[in-house]
Image (cartoon, rainbow, N blue to C red):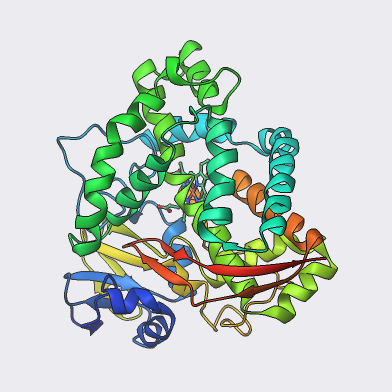
Length: 392
Ligand code: HEM
């Protein structure tokens, strides 16, 4: 590892994950690239390195897994996320069509109605847990409905995705805990993705239409519905939860949003930059790569600290400030390049509608007790957030 700094830090340790931002600052100071001694991997934490690496899919490949460990050759090859072109193109095309801006426009009315219902219910309550009653409840209703998933057993969706996101990190205590519940949910998840389990006129059924037209096989369709459930819920839950915490702890910023609810989409985008739900993903080098005077050899794992790039003062003025009016475009909270989040239109729609409805109807938001963190190897989010709201 000559010419490359190294760090003994464990970015998957509970004390690191509780508050990673000071540690990210120290990691960025090590230089453009550094080694993480504990895991024998390389890493980047600055925006100038992370963003181009995400876009350089030929050098930093995903097909050997976006977690610490390589892919299990005994498992079927995924059709999205952990796959490289040209194999990546087919699944991405089908998912991209299913999750297009046009589809998002059609969903707006239903999502809006549900946001109104949810916020009215919470105003009536006055005090509530903003994680279970809002950040989880809203996406867990609108999103699986849209995919066409049956209403019973939906709590298994969170258990499943928490496990998948934990499994991108090392085999630590967090993974041991989430593995049990995740594996218990696995067969239910697969059942839900089957053609005859899905509601007609749903996004899930749009994937099967691609099979009817011969674009993908029936088997591939089942494996393309599953990523909706793995990648589309926990991420959005944490995006809404983290943004709400930022608003509750920055009353001046909430006031701006309250006076101008049309800032809601922007405020959510800033929330994804300021406290990114997906903190890290790995890549694998396909060749020797020279960066900042050092060389990462071929076939090595590289950890990309996306959440650190989103707080890099070299890219963002007042990077550690949460500002609902900031132009957060260019953040890598949804990734970048060919793997950039294919569900971002849907996630943005959920964020925009729930925060604009809150902004219109709620005058103040305050914490009534310390929020509790839910630690995960890749995701940043909360277990609970007791809050009080006053009606406008
Ligand atoms: C990819 C974050 C919501 C489905 C990604 C990536 C990130 C991300 C960072 C890039 C992965 C990489 O580069 O390796 C988020 C966040 C969300 C969100 C923060 C919510 C706030 C969703 C939703 C869906 C979804 C709602 C489904 C409707 C996917 C899929 C990929 C992906 C299938 C893989 C794309 C590919 O490999 O081409 N997401 N996501 N995500 N996301 Fe999301």
